[in-house]
Every structure is written in structure tokens, then in C-alpha cells.
Image 1 (cartoon, rainbow, N blue to C red):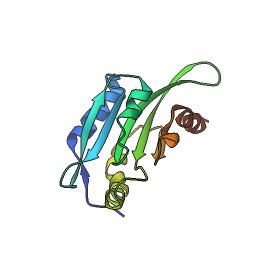
Image 2: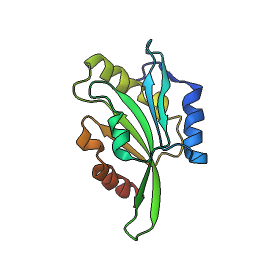
Image 3: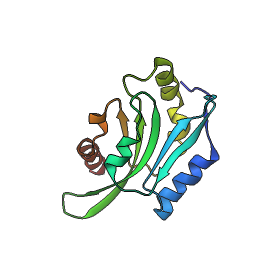
Length: 139
């Protein structure tokens, strides 16, 4: 089910920057105040994963694309673009419903995503958890 929400052109522009020029490490997206459009909330070139996690609200929903760096089992450095859908348990029910029904408006416009992560608490988006999922997607 779709909510009728659309992704703003800036979402695709910033995603292109992250994907092609590698000038960004992550992008956070949110619904605008009218809940009619997905907009860019924050971008960063900081590769500190813990700092990224600190930007996920404990009581609100966000989406993110993170350029996840890791070392493969054979020892070579790898990157995987991860799409995260963050909907914590204590976010308002209505916000979670709109968030879930609006996800595809953003996700389907982002080509080149290597892994998709759903998070309702920090354990589901912790570095080691995401690393395990990313490696599974790489096989």
C-alpha cells in the first residue's frame, strides 16, 4: 500500500553524490511536516558509524542510505550501499504507519542499493548486525 508521498528531487541528487562521487558517507531522509514529500534531513561525510547511529531518533522514523565499508572474508576492502528503514518501537503508531507505507516512494528511486536493513532498535542496526547482513547479500 502506498501513501501517495513522493521523494523530493533533492533526495535523488544527494543520493547521486553519495553513490558516484563518494563525497558523502550517509544521507538521512524524513517526511516533511505536511507528510506529503520525503526530504533530505541530513548529510555527512563522516565515516564514524556510531555518529551515524546517534542521528537516529529514539522516538521518530527516518530512512537512510549509508555507504558501508567493511573487509570481506578474503581480506579485501569492500563497500555496500545500505538502505535503512528506521522505525523505533516507541515512535507514534501513525508515524510508523505513514513511514512504512511511504518507504517504496524513496526506495524504488534509489538504484544501486546493495542491502536493505529494517531497524526498530539499535541492536538491529548495530555495526556487527549490519556487517553480517551485508556479507550475506554479497554471497
